[in-house]
Amino acid sequence: MTDLGIVLDLSGSPSGPTIAEIARATERAGLDVIVVPTPAEDGLDGWTVATWVAAATARIAVGLSRTRPVMPQPTGAAIPIPAVAEKARESLDLLVGPRLLEKGWTEAPADAGPDQVRALAKDGHTVVVPVTSVADVERVAGLLPDRPRSTRGAAARARRRPGIDYDNVPASLADTAVEPGDPRYRSVRSTYMRGGSPGLVLRPRTADQVADALAFAREHRDLPLGIRSAGHGLSGRSTNDGGLIIDVGGIDSVEVLDVERRLVRAGPGATWKQVATAIAPHGWAISSGDHGGVGVGGLATAGGIGLLGRAHGLTIDHVRAVEMVLADGTQVRASAEENSDLFWAVRGAGANFGIATAFELEVDEVAEVGWAQLTFVSEDVEASLLAYARAQTQSPRDTTVFLVTGSPQRGQSVIQLYGMVESADPDTIIERLNAFVPVGQLAQQQVVLTTYASVMSTAADVGPDGHHGAGEPVGRSGFLPELTPEFARDAAAALRGGRLRWFQLRAMGGAIADVAPQETAFSHRDPDFQVTGLGAFHAEMDEVWQPLEAHMEGLYLSFDTAPGPGRVERAFPPPVLDRLRDLKSRYDADGLFRDNFPLAPGARA
Ligand SMILES: Cc1cc2nc3c(=O)[nH]c(=O)nc-3n(C[C@H](O)[C@H](O)[C@H](O)COP(=O)(O)OP(=O)(O)OC[C@H]3O[C@@H](n4cnc5c(N)ncnc54)[C@H](O)[C@@H]3O)c2cc1C
Image (cartoon, rainbow, N blue to C red; front, top):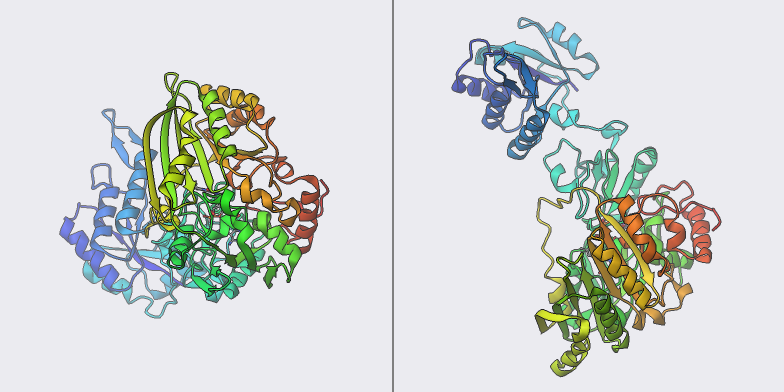
C-alpha cells in the first residue's frame, strides 16, 4: 500500500478559512495525510493548526511534526511540556478519533513527479508534498491515481505495536478486530479494574472464530495473551500492554434448554445480570456473585461465591457442561460423561485450560428473597467481626450475608452487611436479620422483599465506551475455616493500621460444603468464610496479609492479584495441584493460557 498526502505551507500564516479549505480538498481528493509542519517561532502554533485541520475534516490523518507544545520564555528559550502535550493528544483523540500521526512520512519536493514520489514511497513510506493552494492538492492527488490502499489509515497504522502480524489477522476476525489506532480502541483497552494498552483485541463471535483467534495467538506465543469475557477480573489479566486479547464478550446469549430440568445455556460474555433477568420469568435463579456486571466466563471457571451460596452452593456446582476451545484449537465438550477430567479442572481452574464458549447450568427455583443492606458503626471492630461470624454461622442456610469494612476513622469503623434471606416471609427475614444486630450500632438499613434478578440488575450497564479501569488492583484472599478471636484480633489490628483499605468476609458453608472436595478443582469446601483484602501496594499488602494468612488456608483465585511464586501452590492443595498440572501437560503443554495464575505443566507439588 502507498499513503500519499500534503504538507501545509504555514509561512506567511495563512488564514483559518484558507487552511480549512485546503484540508477539506485534501480529504475530498482521497489523500491520506495532512502534515502540519514545525512552525517558525513567531508563526502559528502547530497544535492549534492540527486541531483546526482535524475539526475541518472527518477521516484523514493529521501529521504534526512537533508534537510537544513550546512555551515561550522571557529569555527566548523554549520549554516543552510533555504532560500538556499528552493531554492535548488525548483530547484530540476524543474529539476527532485517533487521527494524529507523529512521525513516519517522507517529504518530496513541491514539484516532484510520479516517478520520484513512487521511488520515495517504496517500502511502504508515506510521502507528503508541500502545497500552498487547492490546485496544488489536486495535482498531488493525480500523481499516483492507482496506488494500493490499506483499510486502516496512516495514523491508525502508526499506533500499531511491535511483534504483531496485523496484516495477517485471520479473515474471520479482521472486521471486528480492534487496534490501538481504531476509534473503538478506547472501549476495549481497559477492564473494570485495570487500565491497559493491548496491541490487538480479537473479538470472536463463534467457537470457530475462537479457534482462529487461538491459531493467531499461537503464532504470537511470546506476547502476553489475555482472555476476556465481561472484564471484571481481578486475578486474570484480561487486559495487558502490547499483547493480544481474545475477547469473547460478544458470545453472550442466554437460552433455556430444558424447562423440566431447569437447564440453561449461557455464553461466557453474558453478565450474571443478563442470566438472572433471562431466567427470572420462570421463577428461577442461580447464585453467582454479588455484582450483576461480573461475567459468566470468568466466574463460572473459578468458583462463584454468591448471595445464595449457603442455600444453593457455588456457581460451578450448577455447571452441567462446558464447551471449550483448547490451546490447539480443538473444540470439546466437557461434562460428567465427556472429558470428565477436563470438566473437573474447569470448575475452579478453568482459565488454565481453554476458552469456554458456552456453559450449561442447572439453575434453582427461587421465589422472592429478602435483600438486606445494613450499615453499622462500631468502636470495637474486633467484637463486631466476632458478632457477625457468630450470627452467620448459626444462621440457617437460607441466609447468606457478606461483610465489608475499611480502616476505622477516628476510632470508628463503618461496617456494611449485605445479603439475602431466601424466604418470601417478612417475619422470617426479620428474624434472620435480627441475629446480626449485635454487630454494632445500626446506622442505616434497607430491607426489601424482591427477586434475585432485581438485586443483580442494580449493576450499571457497561456503555458503548466500555470499561475505564485504571491502574492495577492489589488484592489478597484466603479461606477462613473458622473466625476465631485470634483472627478477629489480627484483622482488627490490620484494619487499624490503615493499610488494609478494603476488607470483606464472604459467608460460605451450607450447600457449598455439601459438595465433596474432590468433585471439582475448587476444593476448599469446608471454610466458614472467604476473606478478601484490597490495598494500594503489593509489598505493603504482603506485610499486612501475612498475620492474617496464618489463620487461613488456600486462597480464592478470583480475588488474589499477588505477583510472584507460591500463590498457585497456596491456591490448590498438593494432590489437586498435581492433578491440575498433569492435565495442563495434556491440554496446554506450551502454557498458552497463562494470564491467570499459570500452572506449570507436569511439575509436582
Ligand atoms: C465488582 C466485583 C464483584 C465481584 N463479586 C464476586 C462475588 O460475589 N463472588 C465471586 O466469586 N467473585 C466475584 N468477583 C470476582 C469475579 O468472579 C472474577 O473477577 C471473574 O473472573 C470475573 O469474570 P469476568 O468474565 O467478568 O472477567 P474477565 O476480566 O473477562 O476475565 C477474568 C479472567 O477469567 C478468565 N476467563 C475469562 N473468560 C474466560 C473464558 N471464556 N474461558 C476461560 N477463562 C476465562 C481469564 O483468565 C481472565 O483473565 C467480583 C469481581 C468484581 C470486579
